[in-house]
Image (tube, rainbow over all chains, first blue to last red; front, side, top):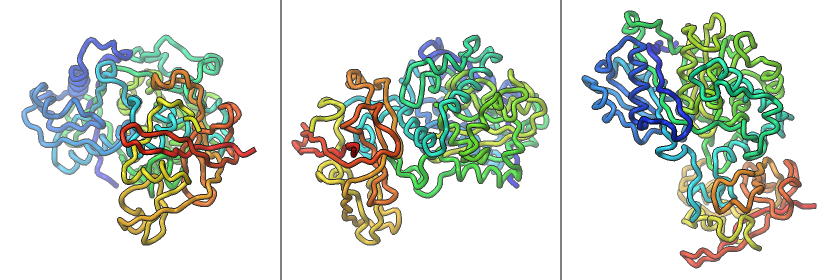
Amino acid sequence: MKKRAVVAGVGESTYYERGRASESEFQLACIAIRNAVADAGLALADVDGFVSYMDQRNDPMRLALALGCKQLTYTAQPWGGGGNGMASAVMLADAAVSGGFAKHVVVFRALAQGQFGRFGQAGGAGYARGNFAFTATYGLLSPAQICALQTSAFMARHGISQEALCDIALASYHHAQSNPRALRYGKPLTREKYHASRWIAEPFHLYDCCPENDGAAAIVVTTPERARDLRKKPVPILAASQGLGFRDGAGAFNEHVFPTAHKHVVGRAIWEQSGVTPADLDVVQFYENFTGPVLIAMCEMGLAPPEGIEEFVSGGRLLAPHGALPLNTSGGNLGEAYIHGFECVVEAVRQVRGESTAQVPDVELSLAVAGPGFAPGSAVLFSN
Amino acid sequence: MARYLGESWMLPGTDALTKRFFTAGALVFQQCAKCAHVQHPPTDVCGACQSFEFTERASAGRGRIESLTVAHYAVHPALHDRVPYVVVLVSVDDVPGVRVVGNVVNRAPDEVAVGQRVRVCFEEAKDPESGEVLRIPQWEVVA
């Protein structure tokens, strides 16, 4: 069994609608990190490592300068894609502290889409080059359209109805209603409102798609020994994995397995490392840029077979506190804020601490699964 | 044949790897010259034997719609008067494992469904930079 690095602190900035943040993206990153470090009971000067994913702007050298870090001994980002790196980043921090390369590593994601444009925003007209030629030439450009093509194949093959997608959206919006941080707080969604909303890219309605937001979220990862004397109960990283399978990540939907959320290898690793099974989980956070791929990711992680996934997500089973397996209990990307999924990691930790605004009783195992759109996928399992 | 998404829509850039697919006037895929492995999209190393030498495999251009989406929201200004449009993923009959993205050009978006049989057709466009004539693979539902 792996050594158990722990999460010692979590924090976030205020979350804003796209373009509404009064702070710069870098300032939002600093706010989230400051809050996570304070939550841990550490000083900013003690931070000696930074990990993010798909972040070209808020680099560790600039952060160390702004935050007054005494020394910096570890900087890293996982390769590839976008939100798929959300849990890979936690894995890299775990590796850093478990391997002795750093003592207190901050993992964060900051994005102000109003300042820098939308992540995954479609490019201009002109030429579609490289693998993009095989998709954009045909008007397939946005993440919504790409995930829609994955989802409609999955629905057709396994006889899954629109209601299953709706249930994913309803769970996120339901949980956002008890979370004052959530941008959809006070804006409940009903099944009727979902079905009446306009199409974006079939089978996705408006409410299948996450909003664009400004904000930042962060955690502090350290060793269990160092965390013993800190302010909050440490939350062990029981398992963390990153992975792709044979031809996973080939362009233009030519993976060996189609459709996929790139979670086959990731799922197997999580259960092997941890020695637990999907049936043991108490609560889950799944990165939902769009609802459909959550269904695929759940199946690939081993939570249910495709033939049973529609029932698995139906009838309030995803709702805290007493559903069979509550999903996205802070509201997730759809309901809380699209911080590229890192709000899901923060929420997974809060569930183990008993600090969620939609708390599940007696959480022992809390899973966070990263974005489905690109390989390699990733996931992290926290334990009590 | 006129372009499905309009004459102003983006063209495929033709580099050493993509050129044949978009100019051949037949449905062709990259095939390893050493081990005969077919891979799409094309890359510069064979994923089966790591050879750098390639030839091509021609397909008869028949297939089945494996997935589709109908785009209602125009993600680019040039598509505002083109939505809703349909994008399909086609499994090619005679080249197992290969899937090709395209548009169905002979049916309204709401008449296209997973499982329908399709055959390849080509839309022509002239690349204003290179002067090259492109023959972009597209799909027709077979009645």
